[in-house]
Length: 194
Image (cartoon, rainbow, N blue to C red; front, side):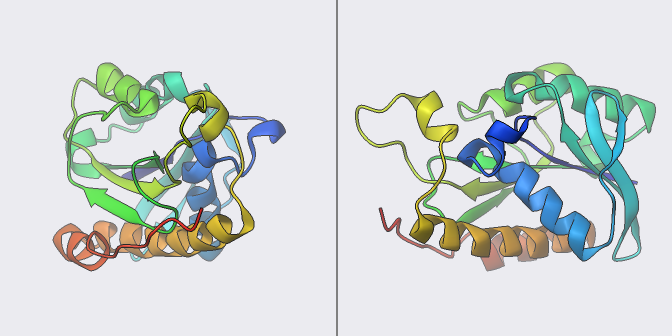
């Protein structure tokens, strides 16, 4: 069984903000595969289903971003999932322009507090991830204001394309084609329009 986690903040006021990129990808996966992310438990909203012959759990932690690892650790433990083999985390990345995605097999938190907490709570940084570009913060802006803000129409359109690419990348990772996914998506470059 594969656990796919999209990171974000719970609550209507955070819907479609940059920091909720992971939730947006979860919604797209859920819609495509008719998986209802409506069960509540393990500090998350989650749903079970099948993607390409693989049993999956799609989860949206409800702990707020900085404590995402609490939910991820509970889900991994309860369903006896190996994070190094069967965990995929999808989250926002300010170092990528909107429309770009990056796939990694493992790595450090790179300053992302949600990932930092997952590494702390699971004891490993060897888990697969898809980073979804949301653009750099403008000079002089507070980082929190930037990631909790919404994108311009132009950036949002590019971001929506990246959500579709993230769904394709997740499908490839589930089929054990992460190298191919990295090859296909990591070299695509889009410049931020802002």
